[in-house]
Image (cartoon, rainbow, N blue to C red; front, side):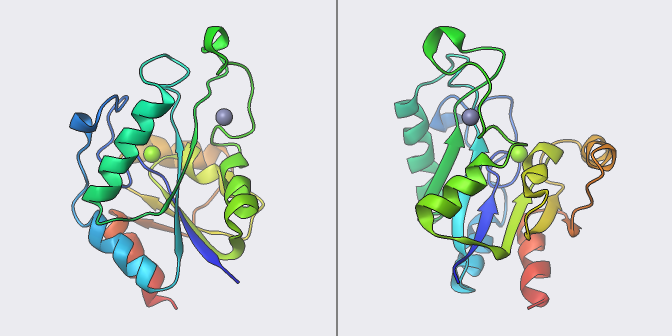
Length: 187
Ligand SMILES: [Mg+2]
Ligand SMILES: [Zn+2]
């Protein structure tokens, strides 16, 4: 069995800003790199799952996003190895092929299924960590441990969104480092 740690990007690994359009706008959160290495050492396959509608909006292209992820990965000490993103947005992007409904934009679970199908990771025993309701709701109906981190979007509003969706994460933590502390303490 290959268990995964599915990681949101913005607000979980790097500081939440409206849209990261270049590596200059990347600000790695304190403790994130060390936390990833602890997860890796504990046997989790690390997979970033991130909505990047900046591509549909024309703010950056696939090559620009790949550059951003290469820089972020380097600043995180070479992890995670796998990066999956949704470039779409239902309301924009019609002119450039990234519009319309898709199955990968979170809170849809498509990126998790891509990880399962392409990387061979299992859901049971895996964990999903993110700062927003949209990041966590893809786990609905899947046997994942979910952790809400307070290092990104304003936490009260996200708690309310989770509550109105009828979803209770398994844990809430200050940031990725605290999330990993809790996860690994329970094993
Ligand atoms: Mg986020
Ligand atoms: Zn998509």
